[in-house]
Structures are given as C-alpha cells and as structure tokens.
Image (tube, rainbow, N blue to C red; front, side, top):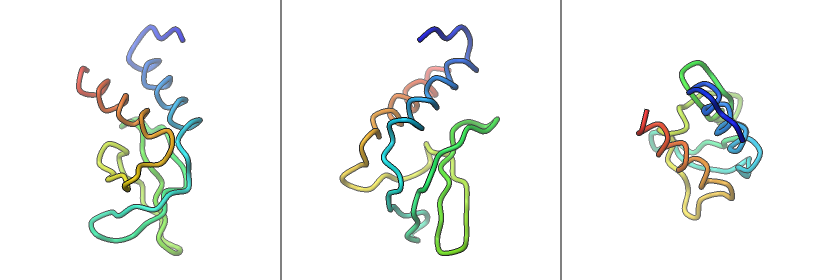
Length: 87
C-alpha cells in the first residue's frame, strides 16, 4: 500500500491490526484479567479497548501484554512496535 507520511503509515498499520487481529481475546492489565474487544486509532497511536465486566479502559497497544499463545494477527502489533521504534 502507498503511504506517503507518518500519518498514512500509522493508518496502514492500524488497518492491518484491525483487520487481522483476532478479537476478542483475554489478557491481563496490571495483573487484572481483561478482554480486548477491539482496537482503535487515536491521535496518540493505536489503542486496545479492554473490558472487565462493565468497566472499559483504553490501553496503548504497545503497552498491552499479549497472552501466550498470542492471538492470530499479533504479528501486526510487532510490526507496529518496530515502526514506532524507527520514528
């Protein structure tokens, strides 16, 4: 895909994560079990929308610990991690 600037590159990575990451999946945030139900693109970057019961929290996807085994499509999170490290 053609991406001409950082915003387009981020949008492209988000499209791959949103399309390929198998959600929902369970993981932990600060030792508390949560369910990641979707991802979203914010001005700060790509975030995971985590649910625990009726509570909802957004977490930067690069700060999210992935379960073992990781869900299908998690390789795009690693691609985003690499891209973020080069910016």
